[in-house]
Length: 264
Ligand SMILES: Nc1ncnc2c1ncn2[C@@H]1O[C@H](COP(=O)(O)OP(=O)(O)OP(=O)(O)O)[C@@H](O)[C@H]1O
Ligand SMILES: [Mg+2]
Image (cartoon, rainbow, N blue to C red; front, side, top):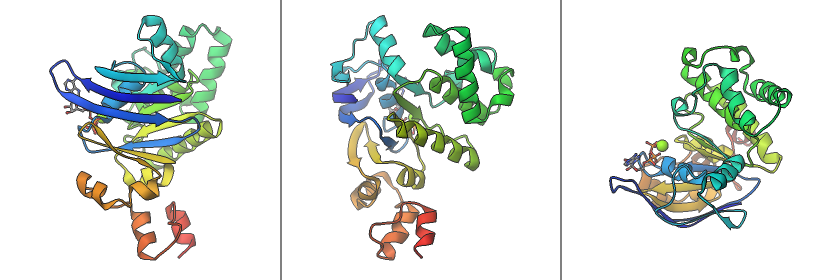
C-alpha cells in the first residue's frame, strides 16, 4: 500500500537520518519498527504521512508517487494517520473532545457524524470520562490515548504510531494492541515503533529493524529475532519467548507467553 524507493533524508543541519530506504508496507499487516535510539525510526514515521519530504527517493501510496502540494498532502494524511512520539506535539485543542473532533470536522463531516466518531473512539480507548477535560490537565498516558483517538477518528487506512505504548500501563497497552488487531482484521495496516522486543515479537506479523538510518532487516519476527548478527549489531537480547522456545526445541517457536506456558 505504501512503498518507499531509495529514500534518503538529511535534516537541514546536514544530519543524514535515513539512507537508501526501500520498503513495502502492505495492507492488513501488523508491522513493528525497532532500532536503537537515534536510528531514524521517528524520521521514517514522519516520511510516511509526508510531514518530512525525502531529500531523494520516492514515497508512493497505492502505486502513485506522493504529491507534496497542499492538496496532495491532505489526501495522503486522510489515508495515513500518524501518532507522534510525543503526544505534546499532537494535541493542541483546549479540551479532549475538541481535539478529537478537529480532524473529522476538517474532513467536512457534520456534527452528528463527528459526535458518533468521538463516542466510538472514546469507548475503544476508555477515555469517555476525559472528554470534557482540558488537555493540559491529563497524565502522560491519558494524553497518548487521546492522541491515538484523534488519529483513529479520521478512519485512516494506515495507522502509524511512534512509540504509542511506552507511556501506557500494561492493561491499557493490551487494550490498545487489541484495538490495533481489530483494525488490521478490518484490512487496515498498523505500524508501531517500539523498544519492547518481546512485544514486537509477540504482536507483529512483520518486523523492520533500523540501525544508523538503514533498514537492516525486514521479515517475520521469528526470523528477524533469531538473527544473532542483528541482535549483536543493536546490542539486544533475544525476545524471551523465542529464546526459551529455542532452548526447548519447540517448532514452531511459541508466539506468546501464554502459548509457551501451554506447551511446557
Ligand atoms: N530536527 C532534527 N535536526 C537534526 N537532526 C535530527 C533532528 N531530529 C532528529 N535528528 C537526528 O536524526 C537521527 C534520527 O533521529 P530519530 O528521531 O529519527 O531517531 P529514533 O530512532 O526515533 O530515536 P529514538 O529511539 O530516540 O526515538 C538522529 O541522529 C538524530 O539526532
Ligand atoms: Mg523516535
